[in-house]
Image 1 (cartoon, one colour):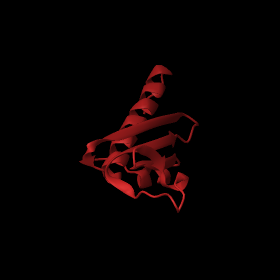
Image 2 (cartoon, helix red, strand yellow):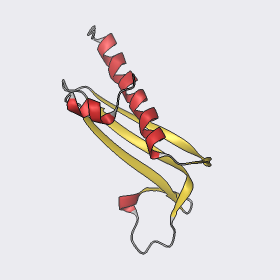
Image 3 (spheres, helix red, strand yellow):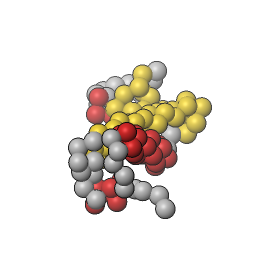
Image 4 (cartoon, helix red, strand yellow):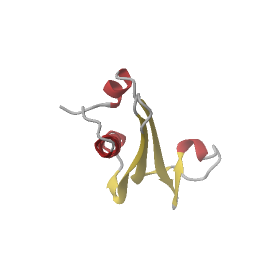
Length: 100
């Protein structure tokens, strides 16, 4: 059973997700691109950035990078970055002697 952003939020986690896409040769968050920027987002390549804070305050940050040769998928990027962030939280808990 996979863990979703929705299920983590329901358990009290704070999950923040951002997506960077290529505009021309530069990697940007959409909010950083001005409306008069002469390029559309490239369909290939990008980065999903995810920050995860557990209910007890442990924080992890992870990214999932998509090759410029591959079509960008937000859903897949979130899934990969979320798994990496959860592994970081689990490692922190293991190092501190906390078990689920």
